Length: 241
Image (cartoon, rainbow, N blue to C red; front, side, top):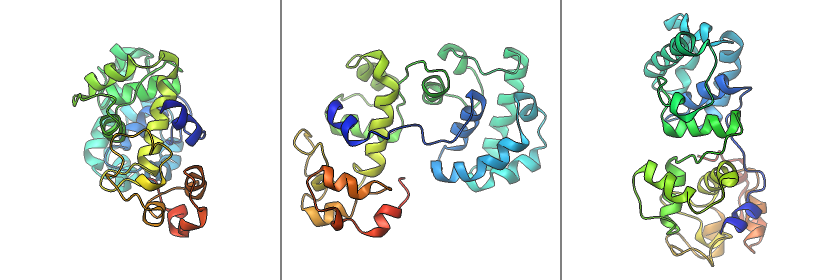
């Protein structure tokens, strides 16, 4: 299944635009209950205005709230960003630390966010157990655990450490584009023959193909042995959730 995933999503990567660990930390905090696409629409102006941890620490709350308002829960996120900046200045000379034990002590950063930062900003392997990851590894029967930390350890034990970060991206890509929460595109999935949950979603080609999402939706259909023309134009243009 890992091999098929890698072949299916050769473009798998962190979908939050960033340049360096601070920007990635900020973008990941903003991504809570918000799509990566929306975050990427907001961050260019945000990153141009706030370039350092000290900038966030001394931010004008009203101004920062207005900049990140489109991401939702902007008051809580503003509070987290200001406190994050203050903690980085006070404890780490304004730099984002590169250790999990340090990252999880920072405001707004839990274990999931810490692993995103480690894997994508510091090249330290990490498993990102977001909602897509949790859903798919349970749906595939890789683990029966429900606690995110236990899921992280269970899946980590199955794969080489060097594969953790990319594996996370591949699974999340699959969850956003193919194996959706309510109605997975079972009949258009490259993992169909290997998946113990095959049949949770439609297995016929036409309805399954319509469920594929993202710019490579037609290519994904072709990889699953379907006619790419079954994928409607709006699915190709659809935002991966």
